[in-house]
Image (cartoon, rainbow, N blue to C red; front, top):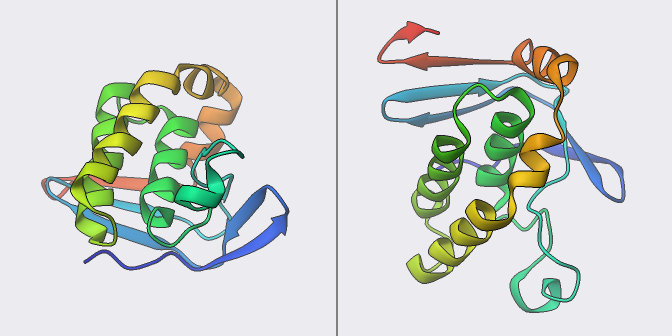
Length: 138
């Protein structure tokens, strides 16, 4: 089971990590610094009453890491999307079919979010996190 990140809402559409958040996901150990601001899971407003909102605890761990991976471009997009799926599954709060639907939506419709993060934002996001791969800091 993957622990929930500790957040505080800084606006209706944004949350901030209030302490560092670490996810161990072989071969990665991802640590995001306190202070990282993100918008949670990108769920269309019409679907939220049915599936939950952007900060639903069932998706929050995956959304926090995925948003940082998109902001930093630290991994290729396809791998960031795969990390999202694996975290959803490992969190253990959603049925597998829901995890696959969420992953498909991100993989299919996430290009605009990925492209929205320019070099300056990527550099800033990289300063807020580290990824250890097989014990080596990359």
